[in-house]
Amino acid sequence: MPFQKSHTPWWIVKGVEPPYKKYAKEILAKKKQHYADGTIKPWNKGLTKETDERVKQAALAISMNKEHSKNISLGKKGISCVKLKGRKRPKEVIDKVLATKKIRFAEGKYIPARYWLGKRLTFIPYMYGKTHTEEARAKLREWRSHQVIPKKDTSIEIKLQDFLATENVSFEKHKPITGQPDIFISPNICIFADGCYWHGCNKCNLEKARHPDDSKITDKLQNSGYKVLRFWEHDIKNNFENVCSKILEEIPC
Image (cartoon, rainbow, N blue to C red):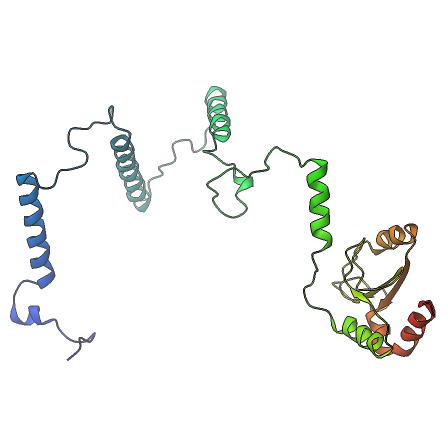
């Protein structure tokens, strides 16, 4: 019968020693015998804090654990264990702590709290204190231009794509140029389907509307010789025929 919470263990009923204690004693006796015979040798035998770093670290951990336990017990009794409470450290001590932190930071053994980003990092960020070369920046810009955000096309983008497909107009999605147009038609037509929420439509007057800098992207594309067509989400949904006619007017015959 399986053991249940309300059941009394059988060793209590019989008044005998629990089996796990018996096994623990047997294992301990075997270990003592092995140590006596020399079959098992303690790794720290004959080593001291002055001669071995591992022993030094173990002793430090034990002392810190004892100090921590002592502080916890004092806190439970209502006794404060904060030694500097109500006082300030001397300037000499502060300078010494800062100097030590700078050395440890340079060695990669210490990271200030502002670099944790919510986690305790165990390494210094690779680019900390450095800047990318112009060549590296160009590569990053090129890589970013091919990254599509969001990964899936929106409903209004799909609606425009379906219309162009029915009109047998060849187009390219998310062309890697300035602003990454939602639809690009050769040779130079850039179409943007702007969501009212994400692009901050004043007509819809959304409370949490975003306001990205779309005008700068439009100016850059126009200065580079592109034709830019921007359509709001509410126009595509409610006045789609007018949107389609504007696109067809710009497409060369």
